[in-house]
Length: 159
Image 1 (cartoon, rainbow, N blue to C red):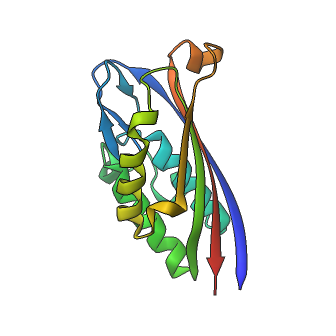
Image 2: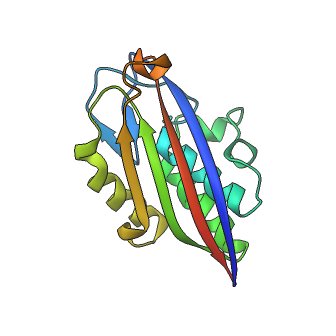
């Protein structure tokens, strides 16, 4: 049995005129995240962690922001396709430990829905997906509410 760990990080700017999608769910807020896709910062961090653990490069390599087919794409599709890449390489998810850093909106009430949504997309048990939310105590770009970042660590298990 082969066990591998991967780490992912993503950040997107908060802007007006966009919906806010985090963890595969839409969250009511006055601002949304800017990006080529739906800019789901948590899913992007998870994809990078999964791809890194399987030594399959990164999200930008597989789903470039210069490709028209990914314009405004639902990031759940990218996550589903990422899971197929790691499964084709002989791996399965062990677990995810992720953290979202945002001053607002309050994300803790949305975590169970994120876990359920991600588990359904990934075809795994929601218990294998840990998501935490934090602020940066009003420090930095996150504290000034200029953007949101996410970090993910994953464990994958190979044949």
